[in-house]
Length: 253
Image 1 (tube, rainbow, N blue to C red):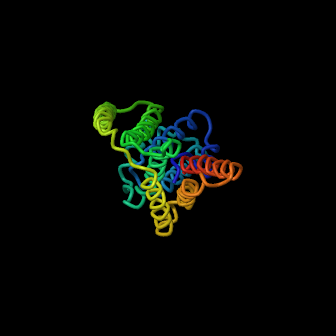
Image 2 (image 1 turned 30 degrees about the vertical axis):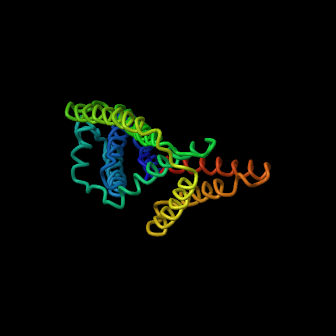
Image 3 (image 1 turned 120 degrees about the vertical axis):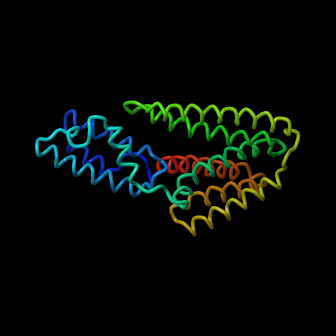
């Protein structure tokens, strides 16, 4: 489930005016920023809170009088009562990152001549994770103030991450002479087609566009080079279009 405002949330926020609107939106966006909490419970709680806020404003009451002067402190109290994500929900959340990272780490191997995947490509995983984390930090910085403990925890986490990133890069660079050939790459893509299809059949929230993407990549790598130039270019265009569409869908959910 997206951590952006849903249409029902937007409609209810539109019914809150003036300074109270800023207060309500700040509180709601802060609640949405907690990726560790059950997203359905968060959404249900937010909609109930917005209903209470609308009632309070219609009664002529200031929202800070009901929820506290600091919307972040109010959100912290609310979020503490909500359940954490289940393991299946964590899989929903991380599945796009896992798939996009694997695609990014292996796709450039297709263009090499001869096609080959170097162990140094593992650093692409770290790059995607870096983008994921920095995006979350920037998002969190948009709220009124981050608590000192929160800021310290983020700082330590990022330092450890960068240290791990540098270490990983150093290790795989030493192993870069070890190359995995095209046949292994093709088997891997085919295996990911099966894995993502089984994952979708087990849990529909993991989306059908992933097995389609992996299947297209597998077919392209297997038969593309033997096709006429026009068919080859058309197949590449289908791959590129589906990859872009999948990335957009994955980041919107």
